Image (tube, rainbow, N blue to C red):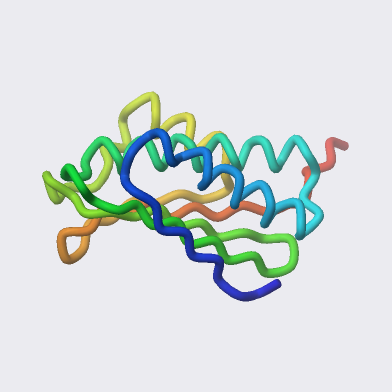
Length: 126
């Protein structure tokens, strides 16, 4: 694929299903295994919930998916009321770090973002 998929929806929990569906479609198109696809979809759900919790009323949530080969980069972002990055000592953050290969959070120009990277390759136990 290699190009960005950009989804903008109201920052409300009712619209998170669209972000999950877009993520699942992108991962399926890139032939991610089903169990990995489920992990990534759940990570998107958690990231959206964190960004929505800090978004002001009437704000939009943006999800950017970039698939290159068997790797996906997902950025979930929206306006921030507190203008602080997501706390990394919470259960939600622990869930995110367990589901994807890399995750980071940032606040810039009043926008909170969570960036995740994951591979579609399953690890092989020796």
